Image 1 (tube, rainbow, N blue to C red):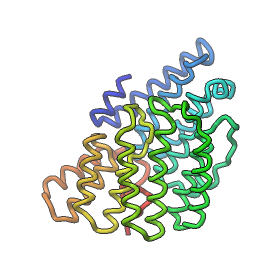
Image 2 (spheres, helix red, strand yellow; image 1 turned 90 degrees about the vertical axis):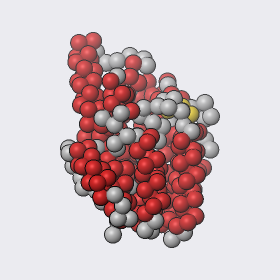
Image 3 (cartoon, rainbow, N blue to C red; image 1 turned 135 degrees about the horizontal axis):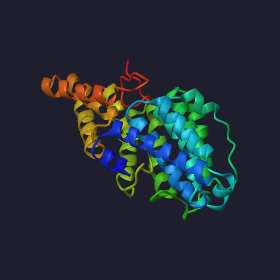
Image 4 (tube, rainbow, N blue to C red; image 1 turned 30 degrees about the horizontal axis):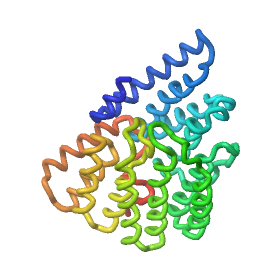
Length: 298
């Protein structure tokens, strides 16, 4: 898939276009040969997954939600049951896209209609509820959701995977991330930042995968919190690190430009970074002022 090269080189809009064509090719194939069989379902899901991921990085909320929902809808129930240890994690992905775009009420309204064999998704559901409650400053409810998440996480089989990573490794990113978001919402900023940095360490050692095991870089949340606390130099470093990992992604470009501007540093680089952001965000259907909608800037 050429979109893997697009993503590694920061060509996010091209990745959207490439995967749009891949999805169309899948649909044409199914018109001729019928529904995919066996593990071919994962390859079909992969194209929509990649499309949604690239759309997330370019601010195309509706497009990302459309394709991540379609991805789940197209996975046959019998396939998910028979291949739960390798495939049920896909069912959780709409929740992660909703976190990316700050759809807190939608997350809290999401029905919990998962089978018993959807261990990872059942845990993931409550992790995103905890994040949503924290973003809405309802820390008591966030703690309750976190408690359910941690209990459900214990039930996820060690052999379960999502792509190239074990679900256990992905949960190891989520646990300190959720804790960090709640701590910040509770006003314990330094402790929250410490937890988010711990989540980043776990994220950085995930095995290579595209889309990655955790779709929303934790650095986007950390950078937004540092910006809100006027720790602009630290935020700049965080955004530079993120852009080294994921070149030209819109969220980090915005964060870097703002962190430089707040420090009155290098007006030329600010202008160049803002121009790159506008290019990546050219087809976006939302306006952002922060690298993470969990931390709106005032």
